[in-house]
Length: 266
Length: 288
Ligand SMILES: Nc1ncnc2c1ncn2[C@@H]1O[C@H](COP(=O)(O)OP(=O)(O)O)[C@@H](O)[C@H]1O
Ligand SMILES: [Mg+2]
Image 1 (cartoon, rainbow over the protein chains, first blue to last red):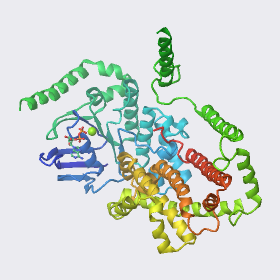
Image 2: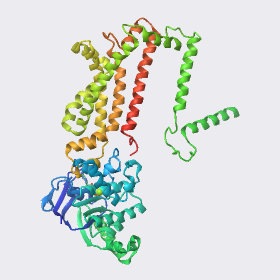
Image 3: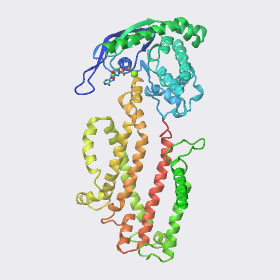
Image 4: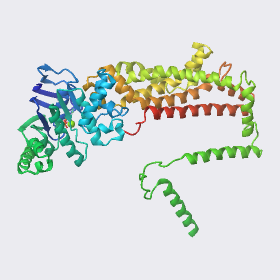
């Protein structure tokens, strides 16, 4: 079983202007992701969610603290952490199957072998019929599914998703929430998922961390199980309209909102 | 009064047709600049121009010395195809010029594209190549033609070098711009799938820069044709530019015009070929 550990991680960006101050994008973040955690980071934009994910992905070196995957420090990006971007980041010159198997191609896997692996994951995201299509022939939701399948092919320990559903319309988004949950259950991967939709966060998370900006910190953490109710009933809308769900949403909104008021006064 | 008014109305109506003020038919997008096919109009313009040329010259309104008839030019095309003019037949001239232009173009492809990519991905290469390229790029080839003669003499090496220099800069700069068109997410995606730096450059950056690289090749070959005549100005034994210049010296205007048409036709055909290649290599261009 894999463990991703963040120990007192902080990230300080240099000032944007010469006279400006350093930007404390993250301060003292401690977080453990393990087993089949589905950790959702929620917060207004600018509170350091992407920075946190970039640290885990190995794109940014933390200014302080440690990031460990299975007790080994993360030194850079690697295939043991799959990243799903907000803007799908597909390669427009490759068709769906080649985009999906891109990572396997980089690892020099033989063509027929990697096609087999990629087909398996395309099937998982419901795109087995679109192997020969090019990205420009796909809808936004389909592109995001290819991005997800591609991240899965290298069998990473954890999936890092930065607002993967942020660019989708509301209906597609609901379908994709269910799809991501199903895939998470099927593959048993750890997931770190960023969103600024409160509903999405509460619905999907096993653990929800609420973040606040300047400096970016975790101000509250919840263990949730609404996803389980969805797995039982397969009725996402009903789960989201249960009183308990609404109560949690109210509380989370109060925290985020209260935090804003505090900042305004301070 | 009413006449000027109605004229006004008519012209405004026509204008609004051209500039698309009214609602468009389903399937067209309102306000899109320049929608619709222009092929028919282009064919019409071309035929009109040739007709005007034919008409004016055949009416004898212009001295053949200034502008010969289309028939005379066509006849010269046939004549020079079999008989030598200025030391060679038309095919001989064409062969010499094609060798120079495509030789330079080929050399530029295998050097300028890698240099442009290297400038895009590496600050050291950018630092090295930026000043010389930016410095000589705006200088017209005629400006450094004498220098190439002093340094390299007057054989094909000098001519190919001159054309090569003209082709190099736009091709290198296009490739460099192409690197910038690759998104940071695409690069990070490749690294997060375990790509090495070399793999990122080849599989993401070079391929992502392909549309600009091909555009650069089209611009570059265009510069090549423009520079050809300059290159063949001094001491050429054959070449279309040489043929045109010798003809001009003896005021054989029909050969001058014929030569211009040959250059134009070859350049146009090659551009059509490049556009075909573009559709094959980057069918996704402009769609994402
Ligand atoms: N490359 C950077 N240089 C300087 N400041 C940055 C950079 N990236 C992000 N920031 C700043 O860090 C803070 C957190 O940004 P980010 O992690 O992108 O937040 P989020 O993803 O939650 O919207 C913001 O205030 C942002 O302006
Ligand atoms: Mg972000």
